[in-house]
Image (cartoon, rainbow, N blue to C red; front, top):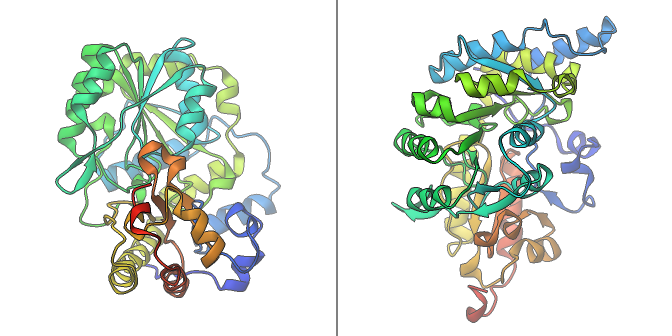
Length: 390
């Protein structure tokens, strides 16, 4: 396994992507989902070789990505994709919108489960549908799908459900039992499930990621999955995602997609993703180890410096959901943290109404940066007790 560590701070501050370019140099950026680690060597080689041969044209339908992804899914998740229909596009968000456009009519209700990835709200609107929020429920000291509430929403006429699996911002990998029940409900009520599985490769050892389409014939009949190497290998700017259908009806929908949906795939994104799936697992395992170390560090730092802050260890990914309500910093603690500690977090309110009083932190960084961020945040005085739930 390759040992992976963060790039030096001077290299990071020379980056021009959103994470390091959006704030002044005195701010520690821990918001948008970019990692501070260097690119995996197989990806570097694939991109350099493409540049050397001038291979910057349109993506070809005869490319290695599908085979690479099928092999990766089989090895990591025991997911057999032989016979499944795969179609690439620019990114996961575009894949979700294009599927929604074909399974809903203008004004149809689409279910999402806040707190959830903020663009879901906009993607539903972009497709011409309307959001029906069904918040996650507290169960067994964790947040899970509220299956009873989902059944009521489906019965009320919802036409689609955008599932986040693993769930951003919690890093929760939904259980097979929950997904099987979800699939049965979807078939009974004629609901299409679109499973955003972008964080799946980042599932920690010891935790099982269950692909939605793998759980049952009902799931395959009722759903799609959308995957990308972008989060796990830190290549979001290269633009490539894969829509997956494993049932006859969903496969037919992908077959009828306009050709432009595929042509939006980035050539460099395809080449980088193919290299990641085929040859990038050693690097990925090193990243998972680095994230696991930071999870342990965060647990210690919170207990030592911010004991009022509640959180749950993520099953997958490098994003953690922090409950600051015990500090009395109001509904948007991220705003105060940025102003007074010069640490940029994602505001919890962006993830839906249940996110008030929370913030999301990106811990795919050096241990030193994580330590500094927590110490800065802890130096902010607590607010008035009466503000803790505002």
